[in-house]
Image (cartoon, rainbow, N blue to C red):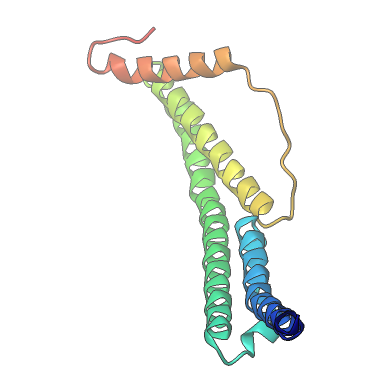
Length: 177
């Protein structure tokens, strides 16, 4: 009995101490895990709490390192989005000038070069569409716009690809069907 009276309070105090210690170690790690999940879900502004960073232990250092990494990732992704938007915008000007030159060539050209000029025109239009899609992608990634879903006619897409491949294959006396 005496052993139980002295042992039970010691076990209780020891258990309470272990619980509080485990909780104080797990709580900041759970916070960091939450910030990591936010970052991986696309929230590039996710950071660990200031209270965690001010700690003077390894967990505080880890929190600082996490925030530095997150800021660097945010900066890189923002720079990539700006570059994509800038390149897409800058490509539009030469394509517009090419379209003007193509129009002049069509008016002055003969029937022998007309199919090639039509082909160049189609490819320029396709490049213009792709640039538009890049700009749309840039706006969607920045959160400024939502994605509009649309149906794609797969047989028409395959037919266009076959026509492109056939056009290129004719130069080597081959064909694609």
